[in-house]
Image (cartoon, rainbow, N blue to C red; front, side, top):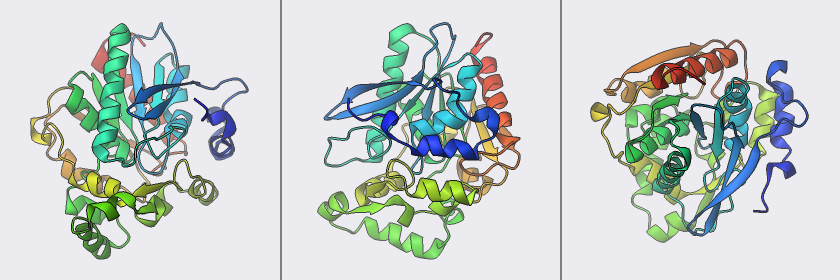
Amino acid sequence: MTNSYRNDSTWVQLQQYLPPAYRWEPGFTPTEESFRWRNSDIHVNRFANPSSKYKVILHHGVGTNGRLLQLIAGAPLAKLGFEVAAVDMPLYGMTRNGEPGIRWEDWVEIGAGFVEREIAADGRPVFLYGLSAGGMLAYNVASVTRKVSGIIGMCFIDARSPQARMRMSNRPRMDEVAFKMLGAMPDGMLRNMRVPMKHLVKMKALVNDKRALRLLLKDKHSAGASVTLEFVDSMIQYRPSIAFEDFDLCPVLLTQPADDRWTPFSVTEPFWSRLHAPKTIVTLEKAGHYPIEEPGLTQMRDAMAAFIRSAGGKGR
């Protein structure tokens, strides 16, 4: 694998906008590995800890990547003794994509396959965390594998819901018309037309610090990434393996940033109100969509750790 975060500066520069306690000391970085999926090398960042009773797998959305999630969620949990792995989905991060077309169901397949691999390796319980669109990705993965011990999400966006889409858009009526037009476009155009995701969604609300936002919007591996219209359409059309009302496989924790200017709780509500599983909400004070603020960051770390220990039994 040639792609590596050793050659990427965005995650290094971003740390200046994190609270001092969340900046990484020299030599403190996750290991990098990959696994083969079709014609792609899927990149994984891992804070390994064989003595940890649990594994936590992080899923990014359409504005971040695995290394950015390790900064705010993975490293804090690793310092508490948990093993944490973050997957870069095709089109994002350091994954080398060799497929001509990528759809949302491919992300679900990759995530589910990784869970299966991790459980088969040593049988340790697996918990999923998802930021932004990664929250629903975590739900979709858990619904496919039926082997996850718990789900944590920063939000849960049911992209099929016009109500949810309109609540998270700056141009709700215009965007709804555009989304409906996708289904009428020829397959070849959907598959071949690539557009920066920041032109399609409310990416300017990704992080509340304007300096951090400028940095991320320039990053082709995260907020500056381009996707095909086919990928966007597949997000909207995807039907989960288990309906929200029927999901009872594991508990679910929502870590909702209090100052989320992109996906406030009203965006998650269409999913949350229908979810059957045991569910808990923790509000992250002063935190934005990609949370880099205190006390929200520490509240998220503590809530995640307590949730994992409660759902999985005693231990780390």
